[in-house]
Length: 255
Image (tube, helix red, strand yellow):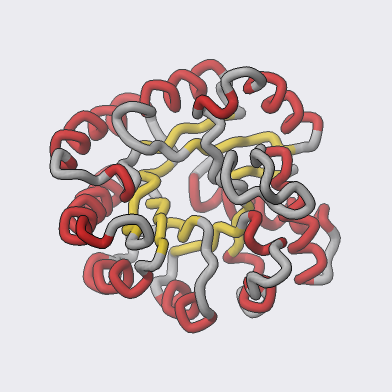
């Protein structure tokens, strides 16, 4: 069994064949799909899909850093009641993204800190989006981390030094997706140095499609391609990869 711990299957990209793709997942032993939210425009779709597919789709509630604008406090006020009312498995995705817009760093930091507070208040893990921003995220987590805070660095693709920093927090995992299959990413060498007990599988569908479908729409059933790559890296069977990463996901998300 496999769990896709990060998929945006609720987006318009899947409007025409969403049910078919969910069926494909079940056929390929991908039995659970975790849905990170983006902002107030997507949260109802996340919740509806989760309610319509109980025990398969599970919601998260959060404000994506690329959606953090001057009205972010209003956005957070809209989203927080969903944490109270719909039992999400995590706060997310949140974090800091300095690839697209560096000018919003200050408000991204504020939004991230607020969502860390949610994670602590509701005893939920936090799913962190880190793009060109590990230094900035570490600065906040170094101050905010506690024994009660846990989470995932979504789409981890940084250095071994950064991986070691994350491991020092004690309760954080690494979300590994399609990038690990890219020939020149170098991520396979970093992942090899991380104990598999700290690894989660994810697709980030419809983005970051693994080889051999790179450039096409990603989908959650492709999580098995990522598992196959990890099987090569760790030199254990794909069945064992599924077993270990599923247990890791169940533990961190309390599934």
